[in-house]
Length: 291
Figure 1 (tube, one colour):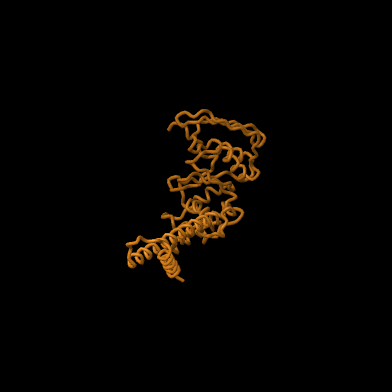
Figure 2 (spheres, helix red, strand yellow):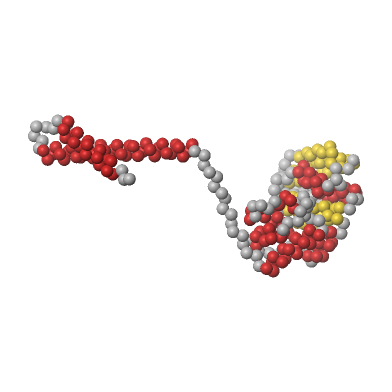
């Protein structure tokens, strides 16, 4: 129901009261008395309406502020379309990687990776699949990337470096082939971004010391190389392998012969966009070393 009749009634009542109660001057005519009474009635009723509306709005504002706000769901982009040929390529790459033990404890359903691959304008290679693993849950809320990545670790090459976490990742991937005790990591004073790094630890019962010129934001690989050599010395039939991308190094522990088989299956060479390599066979580098 409109509020106009209510305020109109109030205005008329105020005007009548004003006409009857307020003493006008002796020379004021009837028409002037009626005019001023109606004017004052409208003025007072209108002012009361404005004040009451302001009070209601203010009370509503406080009520909305105190009331719990429902969480607004984040919009999810519709998945992009993937051509049949690229879908077949995804299935093939996932199958070959699974055959050589890249995924654990489960192998991802290739269909869960289609949307992420569709966003990447490149041929489907192992680096494509690794790059979209963690994005699968964005397009498929029920997907659990952690179920595929027990044998994978990404060490970002352009981020804050955490040597203790890197060592923990390698110990996890070695799955009993590398045991680290008595770990101590020392960082010297930074000079022109170069940070002297000293790491001492006991690996598989033997002391190991590393010293290199590191960098706060760029990955060094001396500890990767050293632990890879200790894993191979343990002779458990698994070796550290990695595949470098623009983001950094994807590291896994694979059976002997897997690197060669993976590169052959995908026709990868050191000149390719990506290529598998045994970590122990790679030349270690320190990001803080002069070029």
